[in-house]
Image (tube, rainbow, N blue to C red):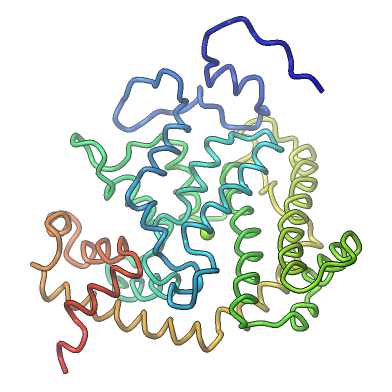
Length: 380
Ligand code: MG
């Protein structure tokens, strides 16, 4: 097929024109944005959500995701996902879904890149430890921490704290932090949640296989894996071993994305969703089919029992929790060891929260380094 004839206009296409041509009526349009807390002039050719995406991508907290644990630590090898590569997989799946459903891709990408930015070092083990350490101060949760990073801790402009993102990006992350509220989040947020689930179900089993924590015969007991294997084998009869596993992993992503797209499209129509407001007044529309949800539940219980509770993972968890808890107490007792920025934060938010913010921002390896340098065996 030939490309369409060139437009003779030399003007750059505006985001408003582009979105008017591409997006569905239920998408969130850039031109309807409620704006930023601190007013800024519009950019010449980047839309507001595109700028937000770029601000998140260029933040220090985003870069640090490269040395943060997703499930397996850096000491266990180089094959498996880090928090950064997980985030990029989520963003890639989310963009595919957004484009097919004609939702706002820029907003979706900004939300996807920010979705795990609040994770402390050592994955959920680190999160649980900080939640215990801060129990009397309102606790700790990675979704709420992401908001603190975006609105307060990242300092990009001398004049005000935070990245000064658009209201819709912050509202999207707030909706993630208020998951238990029972309110339906915007479609773009539902979509990122769905992409997150597709990414981690698939890559955690891939990583666990590579690390030898689970075996192929065990996986074959699970309908989700078995059926994907059968589909791949019927298409490529001769592939075996590692190649077959890779193909099954791709098939798992592709089949989940296809199921989600078909079901969500039908549900959006059935619920009569024709605007972002209607989307939030209705029940969630972007969810997998009942059949796939059931299979995912079986898959996730397997992952929980056999991967997340694997002795090697639990040993890492115990070690990480011990050192983080020691560091939390250690910095509280030696406040002078904190960087100045966090000492200043303490005057507004209290010393415990400031220590929590400092620890949460650390990568696994920086936390290990600082633990050994400052606190290990200091009381023996
Ligand atoms: Mg995630």
